[in-house]
Image 1 (cartoon, rainbow, N blue to C red):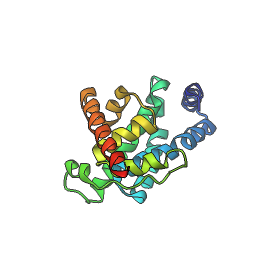
Image 2 (image 1 turned 120 degrees about the vertical axis):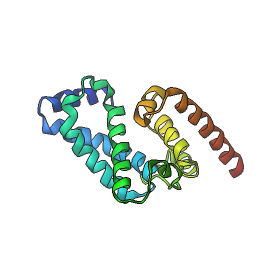
Image 3 (image 1 turned 45 degrees about the vertical axis):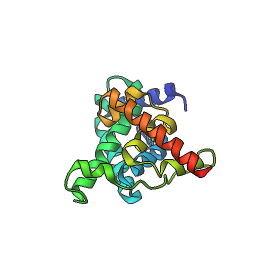
Length: 174
């Protein structure tokens, strides 16, 4: 999908087009679910979080000043909704506990990325989120820092560690 088309949908949605908002939802849903599963470790919680994030998007999209930032904004909304649902369900006592959830395989696997997604499922959650956003969603380090609300240096170090872990996983399989 062309970024220009996505930005046009944002502008049309801000002008009141329900059809454009539906197009945005259809565009973001598969990748948002994949990311939410990576954050939550639970498909049901991920689906609920994405639904809530899209509802929140419908109420707040008029506040988005730069349509070019919609991708990072949606993923940030999804991440916060996952964390909020986890807290509400009282699975965890504090947010630090979320970082040690055992990762699970991405539910939106396709033939071209199955191998990578299987390896990604074996990477710890914190590093796995960075790999998912960088390689599968093709976000920049700056955008990932915005989504995860951490400094750019933290994203770079997580990406470095994640690549090292990924390399070890590949070497173990060979």
